[in-house]
Image 1 (cartoon, rainbow, N blue to C red):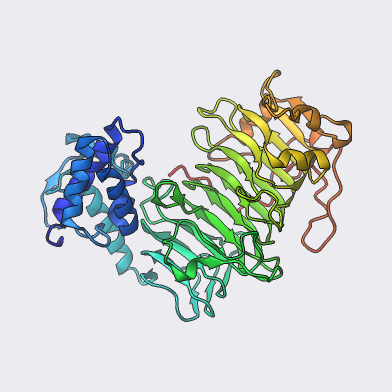
Image 2 (cartoon, one colour):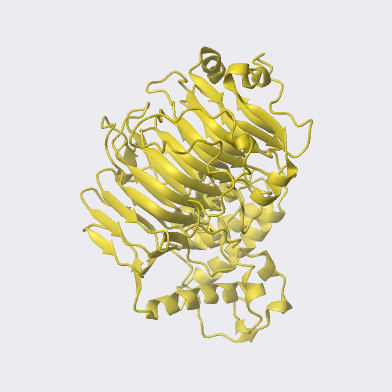
Length: 534
């Protein structure tokens, strides 16, 4: 049964979402309804913003809900002893965050709160079914003793879960981790994390919502924190309450480790804590060179796919598909390496393939962000409904980019801004041996820069050995949302290839442009990646 007052609060919260969606007040945040019910911090920040709205209807609704003071998760506060109603008798269901359930089932559901109660009852029934399964564990608090999640297990995260310092979490191949609204898995500085799947048994972090109803932002994602240097000293992870003592990262141990992630998928993550305060699919904060992140896919996150806050971690064999904001983001002095990265932007979501920064207030802060990227494929739909760039490099980031394929970006391929322009001119920021593919001739690779830095001329300097071709056919296969084919044809992808850096991390045999060997059907993506629409 619902607690006293909760049923009224749930009804009013639903009305508030609809009122905000229809409001002319553009300062109101978009409301993720499942998050509004499931997460106290998100609810409080949303209600505070709404109560100060110039829209009288919105403000009055928010103030009424604040007087009821609903606490904790409301997702389970629904009385299931109710009568049935047909989905088709209302349109509100189609507007809810679980609107895809209508396509899955036309059976009768329980009423009382009308269509909203039906949606919530489905969630309760789903989790009740999981409770009855012998191989399901619910995690409702921090991990305080070393633990192993055994192969075949289904783990349900019910809230933000920290692995505490001195504790080791081991995740075996084939484990599925289901994130409820408001949940996330965070590895604190000083904890140990070992998630090593296999190509035939990847570890999958995904939404706890039923297949067909999953969407970006259903849960929080995975955060690894360590004690490697940043250019702000000690930092705090964004997307977590400011008073959380386990959210700190940074130090002086550049060779330190945040753990192991291999053959891992992270789906539908990026829970919005408050306006402009979101977790990413995968976040590495102050992670050192001893960190192992290989064969990892981040699919359909609400915010960034992967974000690096300082540190020196190296990553290889990465796939980022349909990011809500940037695919790969870095700042605060990240100096690591990446080899073999595929990015596929969505047709209707996403901004940048790369967004690279050093430090906004202090663009010359040390250590300076100076990553090296080799063998990268960045793909976007030239007919996307929004402007997208392959790279935005700014705020003092340096970097080395070699052997890339960049295809289809409708806005422009590269934007180099402010202090980073000087680093491009001095040679601390370089981009070479890259294949730019457009769907038709006449597409710009840059935009006119009022500061006078000519990116097009810089990219076309002979010694950079960049190449520009028109090839609409290449884009068609790479943009397939369900079964993309990223490996290019043999030809320009093998021309003018830069040498691979030497070292234990690097695959010296990848002498081609892009993330995949040209002309191959089976490649390092085979078997463990997936591209579900919902």
